[in-house]
Amino acid sequence: MTYDNTLKYLVEQYPEDFIRYLLASEATDIQILKTELNQEPIRADSVTFLQTANQILHLEFQTLPASTPPLPLRMLDYWVRLYRQYNCDIEQVVIFLKPTTSEAVFVDEFTARNTTHRYRILRIWEQDPEPLLLSPGLLPLATLARTDSPQSLLQQVAVQVSMIEEEATKQSISVCTQLLAGLVFEPELIRQFLRREDMRESAIYQEILQEGLQEGRQRGIEQGIEQGIEQGIEQGRQSELRLVMRLLTRRLGSINSQLQSRLQELSLAQLENLGEVLLDFASEADLMNWLNTIEN
Image (cartoon, rainbow, N blue to C red; front, side):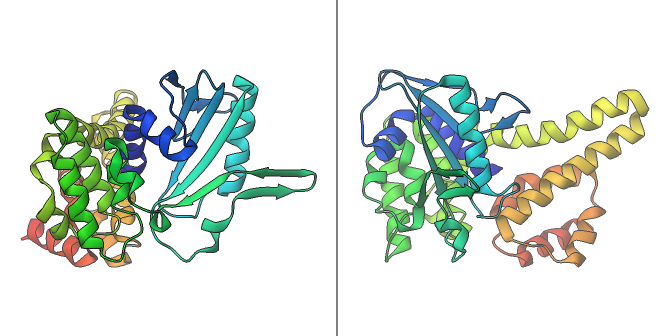
């Protein structure tokens, strides 16, 4: 969720950068469309309308290739709904973020009897970083691009971020860069080149954090009104636990059963605190140390 929200923010704030990079065209007459498509609601990652070209650029960002339903079927579903609603040319691009040897990141079509649907795929770790370094909205993705010297690339991105003149823009791009760089770099290395203070102060980080926290709280509050305060608090805690487990899985991979049992015992306040610090974790050992600290 963190990476999806970060990239959705970048596309909404810098649509021209993504259009220039993915469609090799300039466009100023663009419109950000609703990402919740009709019928039974499904939500796309990004949908941008190029009015003069009468074309839609639909982006999906995938940290992992696994998907339910399978990604090719989802892309067909998105296309049908978009075409039914807007009746125009649709360019679909799936951007895979994290290096993997899975064959799924090479699949660029859905095939069934009498039906074939194709879309573009972009494995970001194979892409030349130079075009990404030219635009603020693409700088965070540059940290994931092809390089023989990852540390030098991260430093180069950090220099480009530091050259952004408008302070609020610089802060937002810095935060997005740190969040995406966390897919491939250790937190200590990221902190060498980018200001950690930007993370806590930034609107985008707070928006991502609060969106997840509010979802957990709201479910608990709504049920608490109907079923009593104690049950509502527990529902909120369980929602918070699910959110934290998803974020930890995104950050560290699978969590062993012993640590999962310890996480089950945390209070709502402890889970909220964990949600704020888990971005600093690089391994299960960091999670275990944090749990040991709060239990002592």
